[in-house]
Length: 357
Image 1: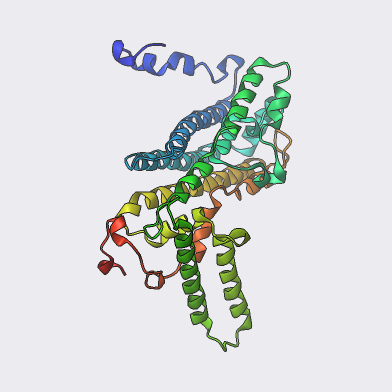
Image 2: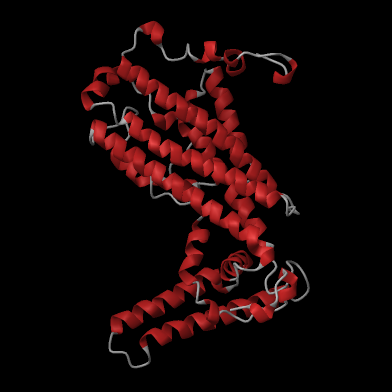
């Protein structure tokens, strides 16, 4: 099918290319109902992966601009929200596959050979696009090593390899996001302006001072619970390490802290919603991976995977992957609204400081 759908009076089947689509379930080789079920579920995953990649590229490209328009942030939130709902849908889709009995799966498993979901290049694409680093993968795995081997004397695999390599050379969503957060105006101080570094450092130091006082107020100077004191002091040290890695203030993390701490400021409404949308997305991915592991355990136990992986054990480890670590980590160092550093230049954020908590 080609051309603009508006230029022809398409039928439903023509518009969706149903004749071609419905010939892709291997009926010509006489698959069983169980195997067709297995094929359709996984084909559906791949279709959703294609949409996920499209949505994430759009968000990445928006945030990668030097000057992100205010009207583009709500669009990004919409794209992220759609992606989150797709992952939630896919998590529930494992439940459909769980209607396949262990014996039903074993009846055609040998026919899969070494084929495995591990070989899904679109799943590698969205992982790379999100920004999952090799060192954070299980065993420091290179996500495209298998595709390099497959590309030897295989034209189709070569095209896929080049597609993955090109994506790896581009900026990831997490990098684009953190660069955007770094430019957050903090206490009215604009990124790159005169005295900005000093202003941001003052904000961070005041926050850490309040954070320390809050901790001391929980146990007091002479608290006999030494273990609790040590934990709180360790928590404060972690706050310092988070905001001052290598002893120097991270403007990106300071910007993230500022957005989370002053969520009610009108100018920060959409940045805060964007951050929440990213956290919600990663949470949905974690749950999708976890549901995958439980489905596999239910149907095939803890036997070796078709691709030679450790099966359930491998899948359980992937459910621990985190990409947007700072967005989760900043929540640990937040303090009560009444203990926050006093907001400066409130009018910059479209807010009356007299109404601040």
